Amino acid sequence: MATKANGTETPDVDNLYHVLLSTSHIQRDPNGAIEKLQVCATFTDLKAAKAEAHKTLFEAGYEREWFTVYDTNQEEFAAHHVKRRTGLAVYAKAQDGTIFRSYVATALNTQGFQSDAEDHKIHFPLYHVIETIVLYDEDDSGEARETNVEGSFRTYEEARKFASEVLLAPEDGVTKESFAQYDEAGPSEKDCGYGENVVVHAVGGNGENLLVSVLKGQELESVRLAEAAIRIRSFN
Image (cartoon, rainbow, N blue to C red; front, side, top):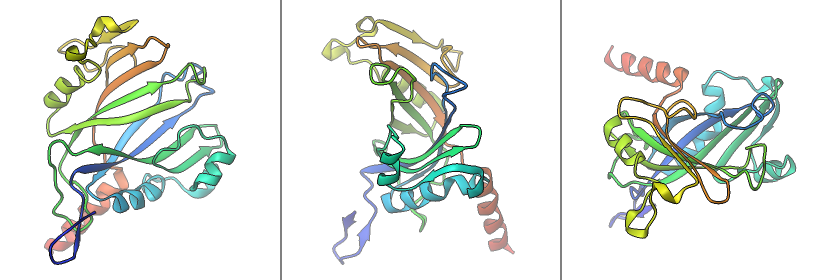
């Protein structure tokens, strides 16, 4: 948090805090290639993002009794051998084996986005560039993954351009030829054949798979309807 001259605290606008919800079913997808990922909300305040992440599943319409596992702290995560813990707020498993993760991803606020709302939430649409690294050398099930928000933009075109360059650094000698495999969606395509919204797929020297996606922020339906109702009531 930054501090004003009068001593009051203001959100640290150097960072954005994204609430992500992932669902996967390793048993149904042995290669771990498919994971549904949603960016449910973006905040300029970490505390507000954490609070949102802890209630995301309920705002999505799920109920506690639907889950055979519902963990919310690091000790519980460790006891269940959860591999991805950075920013994790909730780890849950449904009766059919589907795994849900609600977590906060911190990213640099390179575009200088700010929120004027009391909830510190960004209320205008954003397109996010997501990089997922599947670490098959650590776990051949595909469950060992790292997911990062590399950038957020106002338009799909800006995000798509950034996504096409995010794995490359020509000034450091990193080009498409540096990878064992490199696939990119065509100009008129929105995926390259490795999952919905995945515009770049690459294979690193150690066999890790890198997936770069462009996702539009997607508020959970119940949240959107509730906020719309509040706005309607405020005009009556």
